Image 1 (cartoon, helix red, strand yellow):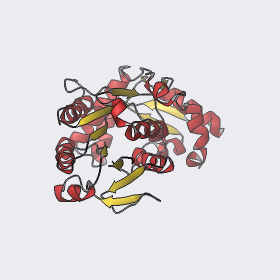
Image 2 (image 1 turned 90 degrees about the vertical axis):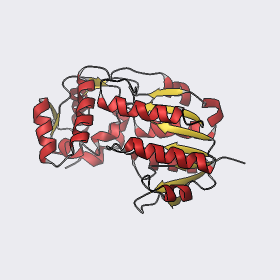
Image 3 (image 1 turned 180 degrees about the vertical axis):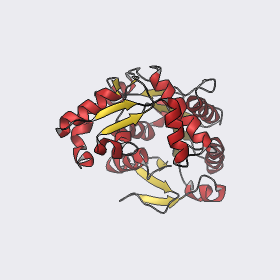
Image 4 (image 1 turned 60 degrees about the vertical axis):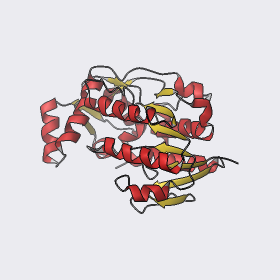
Length: 284
């Protein structure tokens, strides 16, 4: 009999795709949502990472947990809640979606918090696998979509390059692991696309596909911080997001890992394919 898999964060960019792929593969999958939203065709249970009682209910009968946490100030506390609930429920394996560069000793805030949570999982006493994706291609649809449609992408990332990965590949890798977790126990995988691109490369690619000019403007750090404060972003989030911007600008996100191809038996989805698949999203 197949393991029962619970996908936390199942209504987000990666989680929804993951739950859908697992369902399509015939896995016994349950989606967890705290918002009341459901994943079409997938059993959905309510679970609030800040509410241990709801987590106990959501994890009932679950064998394998996909742990995806929101990027917010109390995410380490939410991780502790999830791990404690998993232990109480008898979960046998946790697959944790972390981030490229995760390291509790990192000078970058985003790498440090992701690394601290990875350590919590590794020290939980439950078998685990860590997947560490680089920045998502889908960010250009969600967070940056309005700027792309308006014709100019403003980011405080200098000329740094990123080996962007399509969320569909992140989901595919995690789906493979979740269905056969024992084969990946104790493993750490860095998930990237097959090529590193600058934001200028990205805007040129999207603009060429749309048939119009889209430019990239590298804004100074102080302007980016001021803009986020004006938008009401809290200081922890500003510090964490700016740490990612600085890591990108310094060139630390350009590494291309073979892990996606090794795990899936095919090359990662290219940025050109991603753009072709989502052109309608950027049309004005």
